[in-house]
Length: 269
Image (tube, rainbow, N blue to C red; front, side):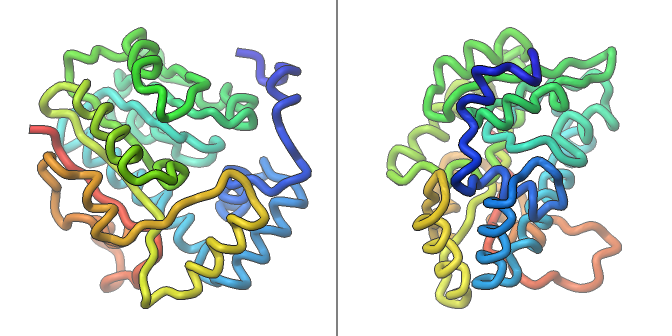
């Protein structure tokens, strides 16, 4: 897949801040533009902890993937809403522990597609693939994923910070349910979501700024609303919590302060 495909670059709007590029900026990446940096700094002024929860979400991904591989025996991952490549992408964490792991990435951001080569590296024993597709197009996603993954065997479905872009909550719940319904018993859902909480009013202000100036728009949900994404599944301890409180590493000093990104991991019975 050419990383410099002109038709993909033509879709990249550098005049408006974009969530994937701002997230990349907060994570210390280089795949962003001055307009993203300016918006990211403004959001950080409104909500000084925003960079911390970008980092916390990324670290949660690493812990969840490690748990899938080492404790659950999962060797297949479907990562939708991948975002821009950065350190410790899903395939890097999984294949470091189990080189035979297979990963399919899905995103519909043209900038992510332009950098997809970084997501397509793989161990010789394993495999990675990338699909340019919208989260809501479940049938096409699974049809494509089946070329790399064995959908008769358990799969970890990774949805980090992506269902926030589905404004209609019932449609969002339905999309996640349709994906999990098509995966076999023993599959897992790994999901994170920006929350709204009266105890974190600065988060609401930051999201309001983003929705006025940036793209795509995002929807906050309460912790209880986030928990609904796991209905019908067996929620792993400690449940739906701030992502930096989901099984923190043993060397973590005390219980980390909550961030406005909540997460959970659940198993399909």
